[in-house]
Length: 195
Image (tube, rainbow, N blue to C red; front, side, top):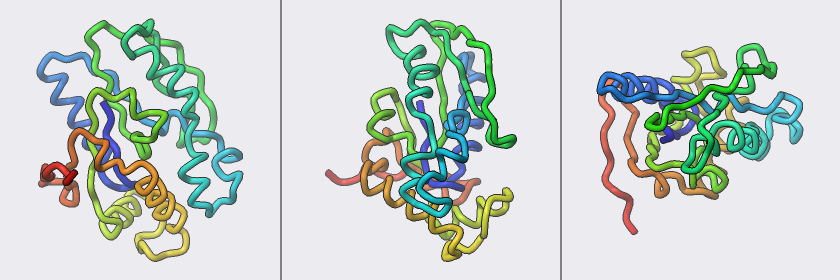
């Protein structure tokens, strides 16, 4: 299962709350984030530090994410998975020992771009958190990431990169559920998109 949305949509909070709810019902939940599979800054910024295309295309190591996390936890997988290979706070690779998942474990992954073609087939269930940039950018800035003004030049990389993703993958139509998460205390289930 994945929780997707733009930066500052509330993905981590939503996924953590979902994990708590599922766990309270007796489920075994494996919690992971795409941030655990970031590429190094050298790869992430090879198209330039301000490149929206670089943000969308170069941020994550999807090959390792599939090989180490998603394939092992998919039907027919060996259930030996690694939940992260990168520490975003320290900006360095990490080595985690493989863990063995129980047969009935539920994987909950939060992160941007998780409805991309190379990942979309892995999700039995997915959520897109709909939040306008006028809300998500200031929300992210409150966590200490970037400028709160969506029109600030520094935010062009993120907003234009997200727009590229939405145009290419249309995650709102790929998601099982679309939730308006503008108000973190009052998420609203949106109707299915037309068509």
